Length: 391
Image (cartoon, rainbow, N blue to C red; front, top):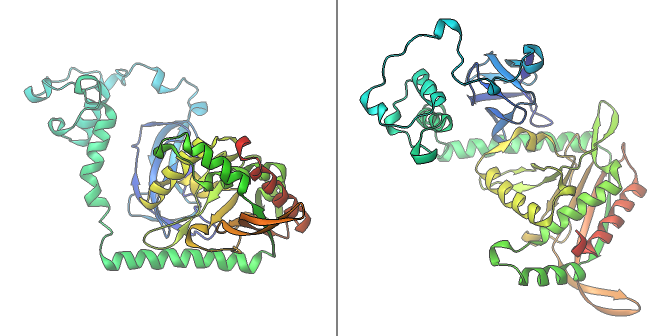
């Protein structure tokens, strides 16, 4: 039996409040499914499961405040069951004691098209199907429709609206405390070194301008995706900066998940991960950025997006900042900061001119790397941005 524990969703998270289970005992789950919602000082986070199996039982109830690492559910894995996943079995299969004739459904329900799974779930929940909108063929009600309707009924009971001034102030205060703890730890424990370089962005901006002219307004690229992709590729060339410092040792990561710093409307900052940043096209990254900003500000992040970042990128150029020197978010070992792209004097081939110039700063952890390693990274970053058409 596998133990599902309260995950750590931040370097200084000690406990979380279980808001809602998204599954029920007996439900089949697969790796990556959302199994629960947990409230932390950074908001409500969707928690994923990282195994295939069947939920056996819950050890925590909505509203419980649970320490990080405590078991909150038990999951019977497929390996333990020694059978094929239940999804491959006929949906009508039931234990012998339940193989009994069922009374005919009410007249109103007869007129509805309802899948067997949806009918069974609605009976368990005591849900009236006449008010449920079906998303299946010809308006058929599916299991997902029943779950959505049930969640809509329960939401007002389980999660009071966070609209009052007092609640907003409490959330902001909690967010500030969480950020203060993480940054205090970073400033105290991490021996930072800082490197800065100026990058000529004229080739990159020229290419992006020409590329966007061929696109509709909706599909145009922003310069931030060039920075994301170039940063990710530079990290693949200098992998020592892509990883963690855990238990007094350096642990480089084999995957590149760049954390993208996003400011929240109610105050505070979160840097969720864009998974496999180095492998995605600019269009995919553009879609990811839009989606991530929307879900972050709506409080719909997944636990893996909170915990998986292997290095963080922060961009303050849109606020007019020329240069910034950020603190590394532990246990990561690097943070890359970008400022505003500004027209500045630039000398090349003994000729002086005006170029769009970007300030890029690397904050490195001296326990894991040194200035020479950081310099190699900034050099690689510059070279990638000189060939934006290849990103």
